[in-house]
Image (cartoon, rainbow, N blue to C red; front, side):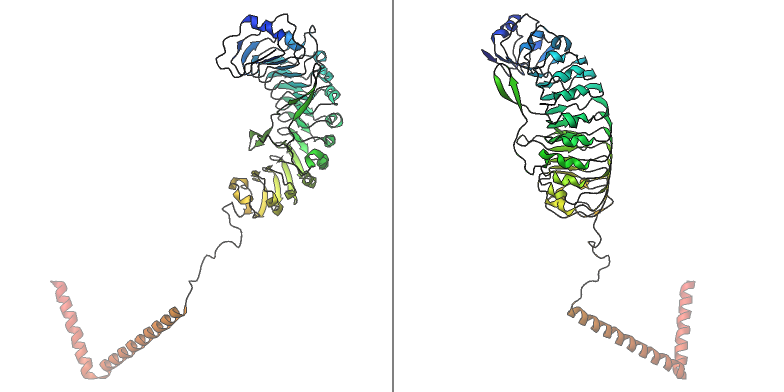
Amino acid sequence: LSLYLSNVCNLPPIPHWFWGKLQTLSVVSIPNSNLTGRIPNLELKLVQSSYIDLSSNKLQGHIPSYLLQAGTLYLSDNKFSDLVSFLCNKNNPNVLVIFDISNNQLKGELPDCWSNLTSLQYVDMSNNKLSGNIPFSMGTLVSMEALILRNNSLSGQLSSSLKNCSNKLAFLDLGENMFHGQIPSWIGDSLQQLVILSLRFNNFYGNIPLNLCYLRKLRVLDLSLNNLSGGIPTCVQNFTSIAQNFVNSTTSMLHLYNPGNGTFYMSYVFNLFLTWKGVDRPYTNADVFLKSIDLSCNHLTGKIPTEIEYLRGLISLNLSSNNLSGEIISNIGNLKFLEFLDLSRNHLSGRIPSSLTYIDRLTMLDLSNNQLFGKIPIGTQLQTFNASSFEGNFDLCGEPLDRKCPGEDPPKHQVPPTDDVGDENSIFLEALYMSMGIGFFTGFVGLVSSIFLLSSWRETYSKFLNTLILKAFMWWKE
C-alpha cells in the first residue's frame, strides 16, 4: 500500500493512530503539507525498504528509531533537533540507504555510531548547527556515494577514515564549516571516484596538493574562501572529465542499491552555486552537468597555468581575489563552453587576449581591478558587457569603457574646409580693402600737403580750428 499527500496546505493534525499504520505502507509521501508536532516513538516493524518522505513540514523533537527500518527517509526542512537517539539505536535492522535531514535544527556533535549504518549510500545533513569533528566511524560507510555536511559548525582536521569510502564516494561537500589544516593529500590518492569536491569557506591553508590532479572524474572543484597559498598546479589538465570538449546532458544520477528491490536509480540534484561578485548564485541549467573550478578568495600566487586551456569542457572558472600575476593565457578562447569567467582582483598584466572574443557562450565576465592595458578586443561579446567588468585597469581603453584609445580621439583644432567659391570671394575682398586703403592714404596726404604748402589754405584752416575751440569752451562754461 502507498500513501501520497503532497502539497496539502490545510491538512488537519495527524492523529496518533495514523503513525501505527506505517507498518502496513511501503510508500508514505506527505511533503510540504504543514504537518506539525512530534512523531510518536512506537514499537513498529516497517515494510522492508519502505519509502518515507515527510520533508518540508514543521515536525520537531526526536526522530523515532523505528524509522531506521526505512530504505529511504526524507526529513529535510523540518525542526528536528536530536540525532543521537535515532542513529545510535542498535535494535533496528540496518537497511537505511538514503537519509536526508538537511535544513533542520540539529545541534551538538555528530554521533560516533555510523558503523551501525553500513548500508547508507546517501547522507545529507547540511544546513544545521552540528559541531565538533567528523567521527572516525563515518569511514565505515564504504558504500556511501554522497556525503553533504555543508553549512554547519564542524571543525578540526578531516578524518583520515574517510579514505575508506574510496569505492563509490562521488559527492563530497564539506563547505561552509570551520575545518582547518592543510587539504589532505589522501583525497586525491584514495577518493578517485569523486565527481564533486567542495571544501569552500573553511580555514584550510597551505598549497593545493598535487594529488588532487589524480581525480580524473572530477567535474566540480570548489576550494574558494580559504587561506590557500602557492601556485595553481599545472597538472590540472589531468581533470579529464572537465577536459572533454563537449558538454552533455548527463545529470547527477546516483546508482543506489536497495537491498529489498535490487538496483534502482535516484535522480539526485546537487545544489551547486557559482560565486559571482561575492554573491552565491545557483547554477540553474538542469540540462547540463556543471564543470567548474573555483579557487577564488585565497592567497594564490604565480601565473595562471597555460594547461588550463586544455580543460575545454569548462563552464565556469573563478580565480578572483588572489595574488595572481602575469598575463591571461593567450589561448583562453579554446574554452568554448565557458559561461562564467572571473579573474578580477588580482595583479594580472598585459593585453586581453583576442581569443577571448571566440567564446560566444560567455554570459558573465569580470576582469576588473588588475593591471591590464591596451585596447579591449573587438568582438560580438566583449562590448556587450558592462563597463564594470573592466574597471580598475587604468591603462585599458576602448568600448565599453568611456576611455578612448590613443589615435581614436578627433584632432582638437580643426581647419574648416574651403571650396573654390570661398577662395574667389576672399581674394576679391582683400583687393577691395587694399585699394580703399591706398585711396584714403593718397587723399589724406594730398589734403595735408595743400594746407601746409599754400599760405591762404593754411590761414583759413587755422581760423576754422580757433573758432571750433572757442565755441566748445563757451558751451562748456554754460
